[in-house]
Image (cartoon, rainbow, N blue to C red; front, top):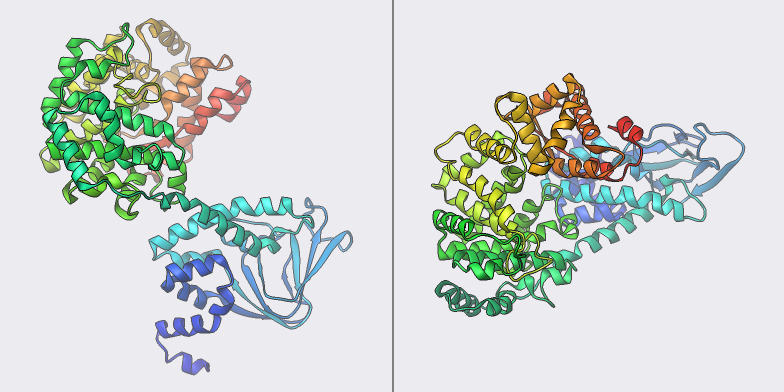
Length: 600
């Protein structure tokens, strides 16, 4: 249309016109076809954003060795592609070249949309030609207003960047990456479709009468332990040996842990001590004294029959959050285990059939508990991994509904912990023996004061009680820091001397850095919370090339790097979470302490 006429059209009409004229070209590409099918408004913006450009004979479109700025869709004309046979060359030579020609529509240099890239070839027009171009900033602007499309493009880009180099390595002609765009796109889409397959692992929900009958027998105590083992998979279909979610996705370990958790919770609720401790060795068996404390906790939680059903559903489905193939199929903001389960419950029908007979209130309670567990993880609290800020988050959540959410969340987390050793036995709780129960009950005794005590009193009350039980002094600030470090190291009283010796071998500056961070609350003071820190310390201690002293120095170096790099200033709160999972794996495998020191 004439420029003057275009100026009279609304922005929406301009977009509709651009889509009508250009969509035939862009729908040939799997990514844009997917955007068209699922996010039509975004596709319309993309069609309008693609910029048409005309080239004369001998025009250079881009040069080898230059930073890529655009993806090109060739439309008409002929183009010459010249690439160096030596991939290490940074400039184009007139000898030793591979030359190919583009005469048909081609997608060139899509990789520039997703990452910084240096051109491996030179593209030149050898006739009058025209094309469409799109930059990284262009596509970001188009998708930025659609969270669903952001997730779709993000997953596609991740898979594309993995696929593209593999295709080049497998190409007999060793084409430059620029010319593999469409082939890589098709392969990427195939992989994405495979990744979505776990979301189709649906099974029929349990019969409502079966669920009601099971819950009635459970409430009345009319079902034995063997009957429970037989009936649970019939009511909680995720655990079915043949058609259940975990069986289909080949995650039997999570299925076993869920079964052990659910049985243990039932035994706790109906005071069945013998059933609960059946898989425990006699030397470590839970005492009657601690069993009475567990019963006191259950009475305090005051879980209703409807809430018990919700607890059992939670325990049945929570393991789905750890299935990586499920997480891979979900949006990027639903990747941690709690978010995966919450997303599946709210957005994917049929995949978690156990939840189908819960009321909307109980569904909301489970989702709130999952969110609560992101803020406060009982396992992290037990190991001193969190801070008073995490306890504060639990207080804030619990105060909104007369402690109902707090109690429900703790019961769910206790149930999950009961099944940690479910791969060894599903007849009761092999994990919740005397030693583990003693530590967990000590933590719960402080958490039960959460409504009346400050977050600092709850947090440090537990840490100090644990340190004193191990024989550590707790009068001075550095002694309190060592006490928390003992929790992080999962130390026993027999290992007290080893920890104290490693601490004494540190420099004065290193001890002060550790003390400052170990005592910081994350509320008024900046605190680094290192997830997987207990694993890192355990791996380093068991590695003869490292040991605990080097591990602590590595931690000090990491804290200093985080501060120098401006992480404190960039953070939006005083609680800064740092994932140490890869660092922990490195500490396990490294064989040269100098390599570790240089890397840390």
